[in-house]
Length: 452
Ligand code: PLP
Image (cartoon, rainbow, N blue to C red; front, side, top):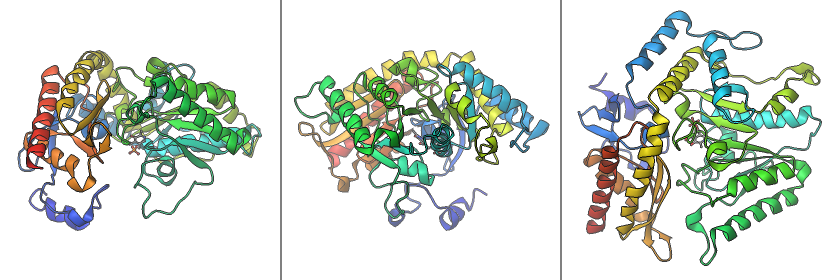
């Protein structure tokens, strides 16, 4: 009921990532309708969605075809037990489609409800795989500072973003360890990109040595760190980290929850853009463009062959979610992929994404913008107090949040993340809409600077 939506929300809904001390109706929004590149709130404000919901609405909002597909699947068969020998047509068909699109021999999929559960599944599969191989000590996982991998306890432990652990008990610290983020903007003064890459690779190898290679099972990384501030690694970084994994009999887990399904112009970024072949690839978000929750953990034939051999534990893989391979979610994902293919949306990303990145460089003229980075339709704009020293803007200034509000007033939604402004629009964006976003961010920063 629209008339008391606020009362109900404030009384009963626990909002993720909310400062409860400042929680009020002011500046908050209830989104009621969504179509194409736009969403409309309960006050009738129509806003250009510069963040695709939360990095996920790749095909744009409100597609009737998606609604029809979902309704049809519900009417045919909305759900049935996916355990053991039971399956459904959309789950099987999507499995084959993912195997066709995914790089190399990532031919088997474990379905989940989203990115966090898909990362949890990845870690369980890594542990199970080495156990089945008799390498019972190979359990440790290396993750990265500033990496974001989700909100369930293991995924949150993999996450390396400062502040996300406050108030929660530490778990997983006996088997999860973090190495430095790869962030070109943070490269020490006087170092070349190559020096910086060498440093990160050396640090990684030293950590493996320190933990003991027989104990280290896997490395997990996003191709470009998303929620950690759109951090871009130096050229060759991922390939070299992957080579180190191979040297020490470790698995490389690519967390492509944000980057898969076109955000960087390819179905999957790891092999097509960064030239390495992950052993496990985790996706969610763009797989169904947020129309229905779905996550998928893709594993290589090598891993599948080991875990499917009935040599231990009676050959039973004792993990699975009620909504594994949910037929409605899988049908939605298949239709979403069909739309991405039919409309050549990845082609649009390649064309418009370059334009977006190039035109956003103009923001560097702002006195408080230290860096504009990213790739295609994934962008981070760093706010700094001092461009020369790259000192981040003081959080007490609430710069990102204030600029976000100013953008809303001008009809554009962006995302404030710490001292960074994040942009990740739906992949159907036009060049004119890119201009609108960049101009709005520019005007909002100008106004913020003037009022400082
Ligand atoms: N991994 C990455 C890279 C993400 O960006 C996210 C969510 O933003 C997740 C995992 C967690 O996905 P979910 O929120 O669907 O559980």
